[in-house]
Image (cartoon, rainbow, N blue to C red; front, top):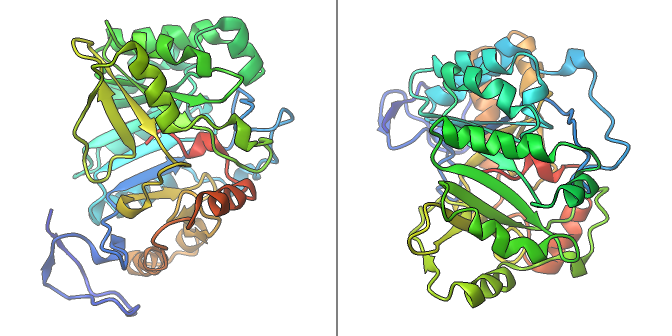
Length: 357
């Protein structure tokens, strides 16, 4: 993709050209040469579940509604990023499907020229009811969170009922032609690591992409090193039953290490945020539900795009703020496993808004 970049109001140390075509937008390219063409937009901080690894049982303090992005603001900001080369947008939360205007947001995003993929990460509770409208509006990628195949265990992990609704949502997505349907499973020792083989078996006859996510520490989830089941341990367990498990080729920006059991319809993957981070190839940016830009999904640094937008600032001014933030992005979020664990344990982020790439 070659874009024509207009000269902004201010220079930030990186070369900006008035009319020279660039391989990718300078505003979305950091000092390490990473091109950020993937934008994740949180639509809400609210969730109808209380997953133990993600959110305290009492919930979290919510931002006042007036400070949340409106539909128009979501689409305006997304459009700005798409003009600069973003071709994939993922809607996250909280739980995005509890926002009443989510279908309208998808429909308006679909009108953005250059946007190829609109995805959503959902817990699946409301999926069956909304999926026909979402697909018609233009949703073409689904990530559904499911950490257990045992109904009673599901209720224990998420502190709510709804297992059968999630399973119906997964089946509905397959029925409606989504391929693959991504299923996100956070693996926790003493909780659900004994279900690894059952999750792999789901891929035998359905076009599912089950992604096993290493348990990560976050503020409020009472993380304990002993609960971590590493990628290598999970892989060894699975290979004991399927020794011919094949490693699949991956793209430079993929977050999951992909594998497939021969002759199975679907595949599996491992998101190794703890044991083998993938910062070096990160192409993701995130806008929070209240309009803050985060250039690192695992960092606390944020800059408000909402306030700048509401002040009536020009597109060029917004791009300068975005470009400066991207320019400050670090090479990686931590230098070692121990420092990573400590840093993440202090974060105010919730796992729900980080998974589902």
